[in-house]
View: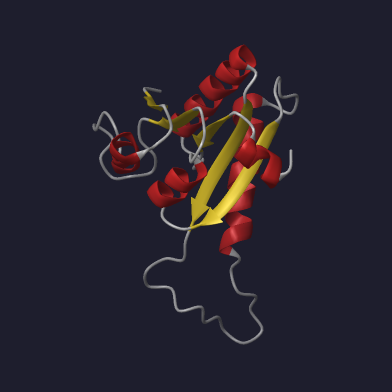
Length: 148
């Protein structure tokens, strides 16, 4: 599915970061897409670390943050769903804060799905900071934080 087609079709957007809760959210979103016939878009956000200067020693290749995020997304889909997806999964790799990226990706979507928490520092939290932000600000009709 092309990015343009994914944006305009009735769709489910699922946030992926490689964590176990995001894998559970992805599996749930795949089942939901099977039931509804909606397109499925798996999105991952990436950004430069706050202290990253972009400098690398002479002769050393600089780290490709976008490519790393793309690999995480691909590996997460393969680990959670396997190579034979029951539905086509469009992918989006976008620079920015996860909450902002997912809000943008969910514009016009039927459903936004995220794990109950990602790689944040409070594993006892029922819903992570990104999920909490999304439930307050998402404009799509439904937003669910999957209680993986």
